[in-house]
Image (cartoon, rainbow, N blue to C red; front, side, top):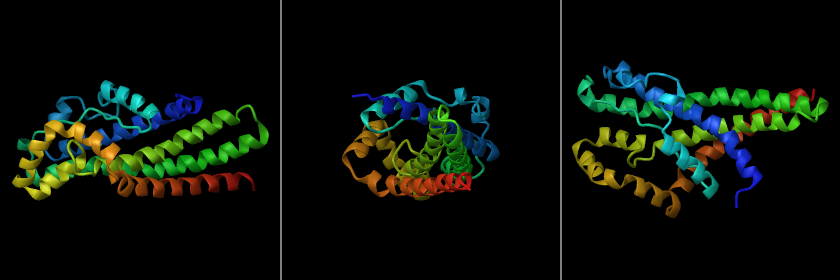
Length: 230
């Protein structure tokens, strides 16, 4: 059953997810462009405009999945041409890790926003109760910024097509790994759904990273609230 809290959580999560995915895909495009492949630029992907990166079906799936208990969605993949790269294997690896690295680089910004929102939320709670629910939603959105970016970084490094981690492993493993992934790739979406729902891989990979990031976020929020109370 869809509750009011589910809806509010989704409203808070969407801006954080859009920001995280947009920067993630831009980072892939930027890395490819810098390494000699003009394909992303020619396809309009070298931009921070979310419209260029968001996949409508991936966005819709995220909403449906959110109410089913897990938030799985995706953006448009950045297309590259290895023939344009000076060192195809090395450069493909660098392009692949650019996305997750961009999510990790966003975390300090979200931590600062959480700290500021904690301070403002505490101040508003002391003086204006009517604005308190709105301030809480803003704080919640920034918390999701931490959660989404930590999750995107960790999730995308899982070495399963079409996630970034499989390009990293393919670059390191060479032709034998490439042939293996070529066989898996047509069934990758189904494989991903099965792994998410029926294996403990999230418990051992995604959950610890998200727990670490959220622990730091709550510390930042508490620090902001404590400062407001002085």
